Image (cartoon, rainbow, N blue to C red; front, side, top):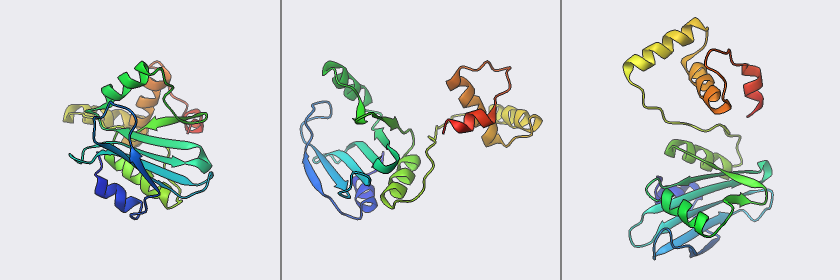
Length: 181
C-alpha cells in the first residue's frame, strides 16, 4: 500500500478537505484527506489513514472527465470494508453510475494517481500480479512464440480468456478484446 507521504507528494501537499471517516471498519482514529481541483470534469483523490498508526486503509483516484474511478483497499482490511458495505446495504460505487476499478498493485495505483492528477493520458488497463515459477514462464514463452506473440500479449490473452469465459482451445480475437478497453 502506498504511504501517506507518497500520496501527499502526488497531490503536491494540496489538501482541500479533511475529516473523520464515518464507518467503523477501519477503526477509531481514522481520517480522510482529499484533494479536489474544484471542477466536476476534473480530478480528485482521497486517502483514508489511521492518524495514530499511519496505516493507510484506502486510496482513490477519480478522473471525472473520463468517468473513471480507481481504488486500492489495503488487503488486510478489505474483508472488513466489504462486510460493512453489506451490513449497511450500500452500493459500492464511486459516484453516480461510475463503479470503482479496484487496483491490485502499488505501481499501478501510483502511476494512475500521478497521471490523473497531472491530467496526463494513462493506461486504463489493470496490472495483475502473477506468481509463476520458471517452468510455467518457459511454457508460456514457448506458446507465445508458437503463436508469434510477445509473452505479454500471450499472458494478456490468457487472462482475457479466463475473464471472458472463452474456452482455452479457441483462438482469441485480439481486435475484439482491444475494443473492451
